[in-house]
Image (cartoon, rainbow, N blue to C red; front, top):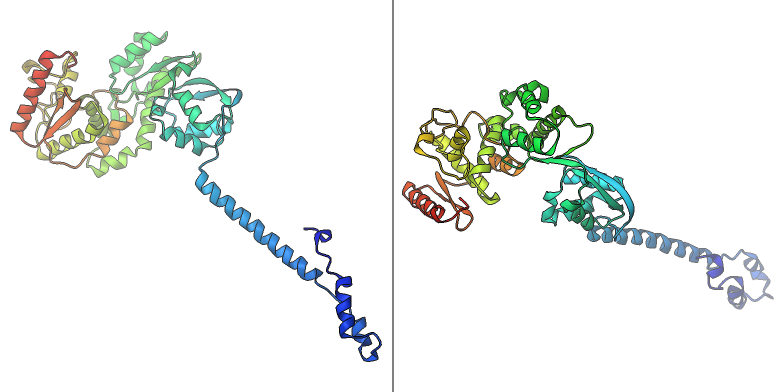
Length: 387
């Protein structure tokens, strides 16, 4: 407030009061009349200044409270202009948010992360090049990236969870100009693709499931090396070494268990339970008796069962005949099964069998109950094609 805005309570307002108290004809009071009179102006200025300071702090506090409850900064959308965004294989949601914030596609990384958490399709975001608008609403940005139709026209190779080396090679050959001979030669020389020592020279399980963009500079070697690097990145991100030690296993054994889960269960909630069955049987010294590992050795396809001859194989992957885990993974596990292998459910189960009719898995610690569950599954498969 300026001085001109203040009430007119200066000398003119005070003077009559002074004269009434001290008449001008009284000589004894002449010194008092000449005494400087401060009036109310300085007091009012102090009050105004104090109120301004309080208001300034109050506005800051209110703003802080609003920020606390309004959530991270976000654009209203729909956005304008264009910008090219490259999503790399294995890139985290947080990293995407940081990149989009830097490019001014979204107002804040936090807004993008929150929107991705609320959108289950966010896990479908592919590694590719996208042309996006500037200053988009975070939720719209997530929806745009999650739509495969918006992925750039550049060529990509997708390795699905559970894919085996042979399947990965077959997919690469179909989607690129690389030949099976080139790829096989590289896979036979682990040092060429950076395979970690824990793999023991076998790339099975170490070609991480993700979508990889193929550019003009991509080579067969760089592509396979990228897949291996993504596995190593996942191991660090999920702290596999520490988790494995807690369970009395090695990182390689965790990858092996996770790869089995990809084949022995068909939905997320069952993965930790199947992991617990595996660990319970290992602790009891029982053979795992897993058809998935036997099928891996026999290269059986088409169903989940094995024959008596297959189960009589001398292969170290025959977990009916040999106790303990097989020598290595039987496919490439994704993050979900790796996390389940690291964090098994609590339970006394020793047996499990798919419940095809309900799309779940039946668990029990009773062998007799397990036989009944298995017969129910076989009966269903006699009349249905999905198993």
